[in-house]
Length: 446
Image (cartoon, rainbow, N blue to C red; front, side):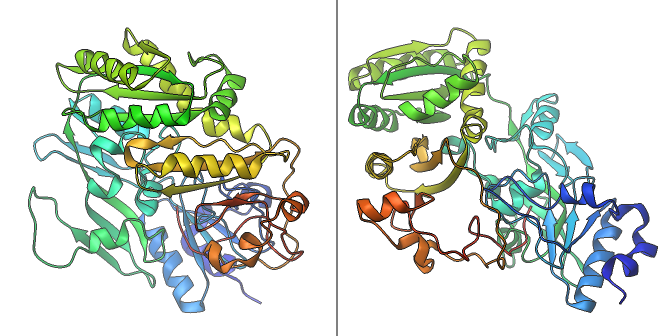
């Protein structure tokens, strides 16, 4: 029987990955305990024509396609599925900056930090700042509408994507959006593609909006002896006329995880910490001093202002290391939930109450300026379970009976995993024997 590998070989040549060991490295992303299927094909696109060839083949023969970038996603959306073609676009790396128009044309394989560095050299700034900026790609950011640590001031990826070039299923190429400062005619097709995780087409080029570069960010760190005191600090900063460019909450478990990796300047023994920054041109220094005073008035036990950019960078490096620090502690489940500003402390507390008495940790960092609570449940003794049954299609937690089941202490103690449910509570459910090792996704994504 002739398969996609045989049919595509004449058109794609060395873009096809023939070595199964190499192909296996493209099978999964960074989600919890991913598993590779037995049968899939990997194509590392060299140019747009490779993308067209793959999508034409897939459309003609009914083959699923998984567009893929750097595989840093935690969603499972860029994992290979049985019989699929994994279409990796990391090698589409065109980059040109137009300082006059204030935008950059970017290939989906450009790493986010590379774009930020290139724009900085010409006095401009690309604001979206995912925690994985040093490794994630622009294509993946567009596919997931990535936010980041500075979205309180600057917004998310969708706020900066002006136009796209996309290859549709079947191989048709289209361009969406505008490259001008203003454009109000027609449907917002660009907004439709941003965040669609590759389900509507494959992005091969993007025009992203740039803004004038701010000052180097300066940082203040405040520690608290209770979550309630930290909440008062957040509300005080939200009342500021000149709001922070970053406001991050770290609980005791999150700080402890970071400290196992290295000394990044975070204190020990506090119940919570707030990391706050300003990059306001000409006023960053006075802003962080004012923020520190407001946090002290709100009940901070200690406030420290970083004296220079090097100290500020060290604190931020520690925050960015959190995900890697938690990975090193063993099996884990992670879920982001956006709640009202007054709601995130109770959401964080519910995770700790559910994990108490079990061999589980529940760090709950948060981008509190946008009220995004990031709950991570981890077990130091847990090892990933390999899924030997069928790969399940992802469903919301309220449709997954093994997520919402078993909330009593006895049934929770017998559960083998823990994770947040759709209503914000956390439970360690009894997973059925044929459930996947993680909530799998058959959606395409980067």
